[in-house]
Image (cartoon, rainbow, N blue to C red; front, side, top):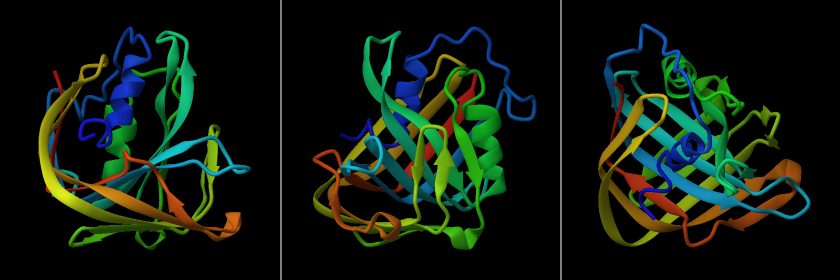
Amino acid sequence: MKNKLIFGTILTLSLAFIVSAACITPAFAQVTYYAHANASGATIIDLPNHQPKTQIVVMHFDRGDHGAGDYLEVSTWQFVPPLGKSVWATVAIVTDSPSIAAFYRDFVFVGLPGVPVAVLLVKQCQLEVFRICKTVSAYWTEPITCPAVILPPGFLLFSGYGSAQTASFVHKLPNGVTLAVNNNVDYSAHAFFSAPAWKYCGPVGDESTTIDTNVDLHISHA
């Protein structure tokens, strides 16, 4: 449960494609970048008559080399021929930090052609992720639009329960980027989603829904 939700879709995406040459921006090459998140949540939204099943990961970075900022990752369940099966594939990143937007556009996703990932920069008031104890909330006021999905403005509330579990893990992407997560503390959670444009207000998610705290993230390129 721990490894598959924090940037798990990036790992899945990377395993699905053969990368011949990674064109890493010189400003980002040969460096390890650090970020700390004090709030994160992940769930699956699967509502009939709206859009394909979608995984949402939200995160608030309170400090790090790219400063503070909010982050939302959208993935869809897609069949990937090289794997011969369906996986979660990242289709959009939304953030209110220009530095974080540039980092994911020019570093993390570079060298993974064939996977259109929209990196969307919004104003601080248009995306907010925050945590109080074992509750994580997120809202976005602008529609998230990319070729794979259109997600209307919405609100997510994660309510954690049970005992905390810790995990540390490393994902090595074929474009040379390494994602290392340490001191990750997470809980199982229930998720509540509201989207006025869809006239929906109610529970979403399944047993994979989690919240995470105290996440130390190191992203580097060999």
